Image 1: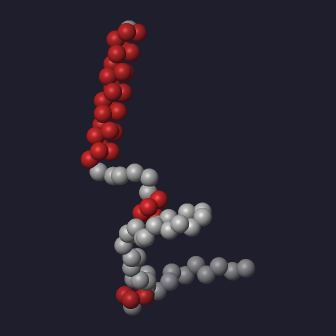
Image 2: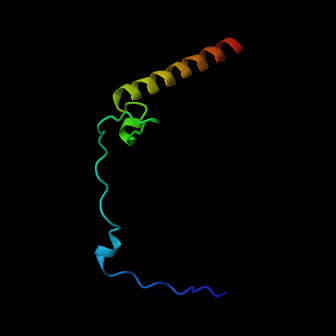
Image 3: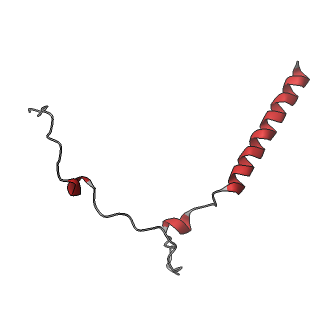
Length: 76
């Protein structure tokens, strides 16, 4: 079996390089009563993003640093 190792000529037609139709925006559809439940990607997302998540992450990091310092002071 032979493998062609020659470099391919770059495609000149930009429409062929574009890769197809753009994805539609992800919006929640009307809720269905199907069993098992059929959910869109937006409905299936398990949490919110933004400031509340950032605040929780920063607070957790701060508590971890405080606990680390407390252990260092107690042990040594």
